[in-house]
Length: 486
Image (cartoon, rainbow, N blue to C red; front, side):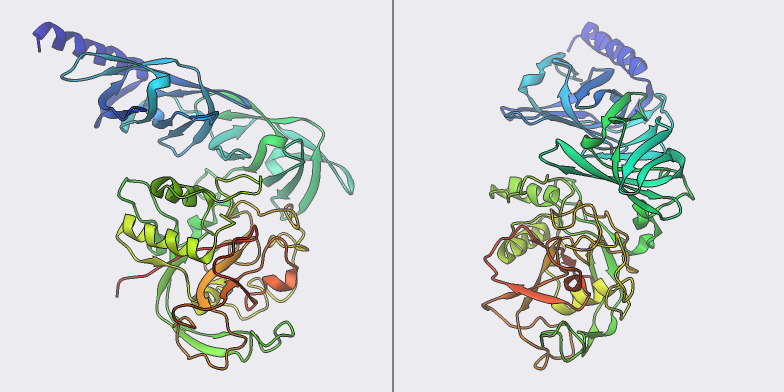
């Protein structure tokens, strides 16, 4: 390579790096083309501009982590080094790769499948972004709410709420996105449901882009959650001991489900009162070894990654949306196949929980009917008469309700969860350990936790139900256990 070219390359790097606004770099960007070619270097683009459904987002190069170009009408997706996710249409049509030993390479965006960006030492200006937005299409980003007052029409009439008085704002989409129902959770715990008189909420991203997000496009708005010492239940996982949190890396660098380690111990499985049947009787004292279990039910995003990797057909989402919703329309066999795949990808042992492990985790150390007590309380779960936005209609995105004392979300309601055990009508033949009931083939498998379509008595911690292991349903998903080293 000539000295003239080396000098030109260095000058181009210096100009680009100063334009992008950072001083030092580590590693190279990796551009993968649709034909399979892969190039390493630096993408010479100061900013990336994405046209979204609610405005234009401009993201500095130094903040980019991944760009995935959509196919067949799918949106382009940007992930930042902060973890922000945006989807829309990339406005740049050609990018230039600067390479060390090869000529500069211009690449048409239509030829690119994805770009993985190296992490940079950053200097670009970042705007105040204490709030978090999640949209119906599963965009998720930090922001600052500009709108000061929101006027809601509820069953009790008009209510004016200042944004500083709001902790959470949840929205469920109705009539194929043409209508919506919203719920405000105020700082003092008051819950109000209704619709807003204004069409949209105005926010500013950490990159300085101002967006108008229609309420019908919004899924959740969590306010003042990015301040240290100001942690709401939205970030309840931050209240968990970090030593108990587990999230394994896969071979491609992506992360598996978030798990929480639970110490072993004894508890009484079942309910002497039950629901009139014998499947919860007699209560049995069970001793469990320590294990880790999913903080959330396995989501469509996580299961779709498994499908993409293995060529498996993706389950139907009922038109409710994928992303962070719990995966449904998966059989017991599908759930086990996912666990085996995750085990191979991480080198750890994942599996379905036993019936005893599931109830122990769901109770969170309590012995009451529900983990929060013996009485039905509003907005604690998603079931047919639980008072939630989604009740009797559809599943809710994971984590929309408070966690139990162990830090687990949605163990009551939302979707039933497959466990390892064969179905038995009672506990009389059970042993006092955590061995799953039944070996090999069995007619039905146990499902736990109740669902959005079932009444509140079915979301009790002791409630058990059953289904055929090959059956797929819109109210059944699963969460996994990860075995711990001895």
